[in-house]
Amino acid sequence: MSKERKVGQPLKWNNPKELQEKILEYFDWTKENDMNITVTGLAWYLGCSKQTLQNYENCEDNNWLKRCSDEEKKQYVDLLKDAKRFIEMNYEERLYDRAKTTGGIFALKNLFGWKDQQEIVTTNKETDISKEDIDKQLEELGVNIEDTEE
Image 1 (cartoon, rainbow, N blue to C red):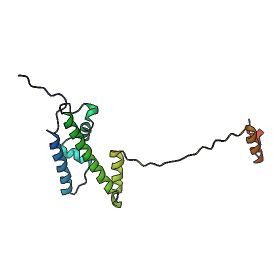
Image 2 (tube, rainbow, N blue to C red):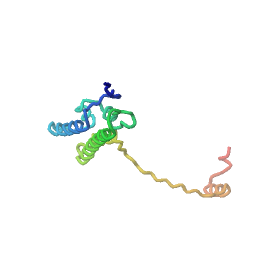
Image 3 (cartoon, one colour):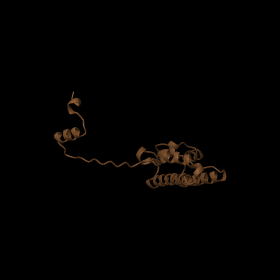
């Protein structure tokens, strides 16, 4: 009687439901302790690193969660993406409190890929002007062409 041997990284949580419960516990814990929710705080509360959360979230790209069904993988990924969206939303909300915008801006840029962006529009007006016309205009401006050609 052979047991099927599971390969890959051992799972941090027994199933997606357990992860969901822990995420919700973290959100409640931050509220009870008057703390802001953060990605690092979530990782700390879950007993792992931010990299572990990223590995779960990107399991298709890095071959994590090999021992899980496709449905379980999807549930893990969706839970973590939803948690991060909720955290991002809270950072956005902080932008409305003028006294606390700097930290929110920093987090949004560094954790969620936000960026300051300016759009600069340039126009290039190409004209077909002959060397003779240029020389004539320079002469009208009083520029001595012979002095500039050395």
